[in-house]
Length: 149
Image 1 (tube, rainbow, N blue to C red):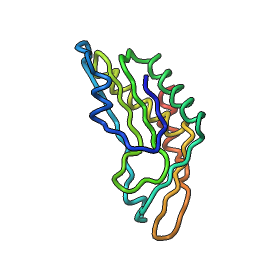
Image 2 (cartoon, rainbow, N blue to C red):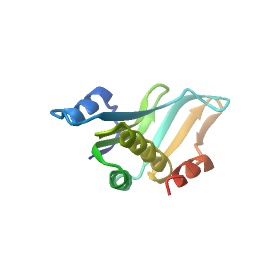
Image 3 (cartoon, helix red, strand yellow):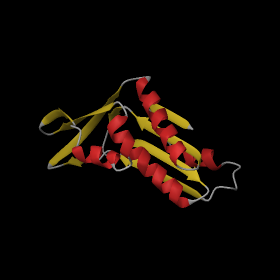
Image 4 (cartoon, one colour):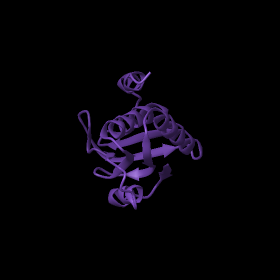
């Protein structure tokens, strides 16, 4: 399992290759990449600043990865979450799951994102034409996490 909270961008192809290198038993690789959008509601986003709690962020990402690995037969897992100043089109988060079968890879990736949205200690501040504001948590994110219970 590879877990990282980092300021620098990631290379999706490189991360996939690390998981499948010298593996011929894998039947599925599922990926999710979250990006900075240039619009939020009716407002244009100029920049997003992601803050995190160092140490705790990695601990929570690891906990989420372990939970997914306990539920599905995963052969490999990568979770990378960026922090710092990001701009529209930039990568924010990468989840890669590998398994012998697609269902486990798909479900585990979706589970990880649903839990990450509520439990990982990252905070987003958007800069728009109206100034800066913190992005509030959504009840929809809680509902998405709860469906896995």
